[in-house]
Image 1: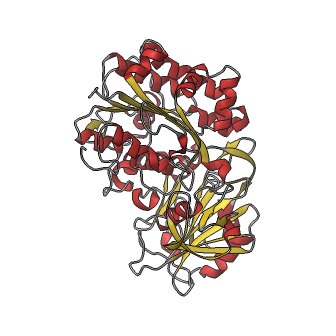
Image 2: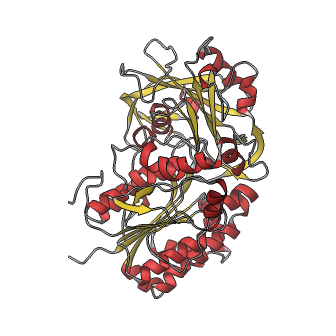
Amino acid sequence: MAPRKKLILTYVDSLRTDMLERAVAEGRAPTFGALIERGVLVRDCVSSFPSVTPVACAEIATGRGADEHWISGMNWYHRLERRYVEYGSSLEATRAFGVFRALYDLVFNMNLAHLSPEIETLFESLDDAGLRTACTPFLIYRGRHRHPVSLDGLLRRAVEATRLHFRHHTWGPAELFYGDLYASRDVPCKSTSIPGVRDPYAACCAVELMKEEGFDFLLLSLPDNDNYSHRHGPEATVESIGRADECFASLVEEGGGIDAFLAEHALILMADHAQTDVRRGLPLAELLEAEWSVLQPSDDRPELAQLAVSPTGRAAHVYLLPGRGERAEPTAVGARLAELEGVDLVCRLVDESGAQLRREQPGMAPRGGEWAVVERGGEELRFRPGEGVEDLRGGRWELAGEPAALEATVAAGRLSSEAYPDPLERVWSALTAPHAGDFVLSLELGYEAVDWGGTSHVGGGSHGALHAGDSLGPLLFLGCGPDSAAAREQWTLRDVAPVVREHFGLDPGGGGAG
């Protein structure tokens, strides 16, 4: 049997299929165009929910949803520690929670404490099989190799100025490059942690690894398109897609041109989510403060708050807190959320009697039998795993209520929704995740939840909602994966990790060698 090709999983943050195809048609992305001509393109791969980068990256790296990988958003409330976790929604939000604490959560806790220890990442599976793993800056990187922090540039100056101790090691793939924080080997690449200028660094590190035959599996992260789309809107991203194409072209050039490169490398090119235009910010915490006490970013008395509010792009979590004194009444909170301008879907869990399920600890209550509820425009749909309708991925669900709440139709026992792709599995996973809010919101098109720094992307683009505009992106296979996009009726991010594992002869679910 011929040796397996090295595999490069290339992820372009916020890449929309229509904009990728426009960039190719206009001659701005010739390398991506050449790959599309030779590969199998899925135009509508479904993201996570919330469709934000931490959740999506965890799904890509593990093949599991938030109910299993445990990462719930850009911002979420930690019930045990009685505090918010903030992964960097904006510089202003980072400052509101404290730069060091937010950085610590992003760099250390996300992978080593927040990501479930009960499941394997791609890096762990491949490391255990003796394969050489590598990663350029990507949020989920947990592997079997220990790396010391190597502060450089702006981060070193910031840490020295504040006299903070930042000495922890981390665990990642054999080769780990993470801007100013980690570098597993010396490379002549200018590191940076500044959003919008990170693609050239990632590509440079990848080229250096290619020169040294330094990997069997490389996750190449090209994140700058996301920052550009946030600032200028998704319709302007032909420019940033062109820049990403130039960066990837440097790998192809190092590989001897497109044919020689593909003779040695299999490839997956994909997005984590898409973006839609933002016209208005929704100050969710401010609106709820009119009726309840809402936990603040640096609250000295968290035990007194009635609600915690976690904006996460075009979605949000709202938590019912077990604080001292009068508690927020769930029905009243749900009714208020449903009537807010800009809120599209209000999602929650109820017990068998229909009473709101409120969680005071991470994880689900042990009783079982819960229903997920989605409310939209006065219509309500309840569902849970069970015998009944089948979704496009073969999952089976028990339904009660109006599928129109998700603009879904049921025909011949199968449920589908063009407006909200893969809605039942995504909402169920989001609601049953250990750190999910008691309410999970998806916002109407044009709206974004204002983050805790008072920032939104009005005039630009954003993502996070269950809506198709936020959720569908391209997924391209060359030298691995299916022979046709029709191999699955609906592809999701959860399908990527099994393809990678299978390419290397491993159990697609995360087990050992096959």
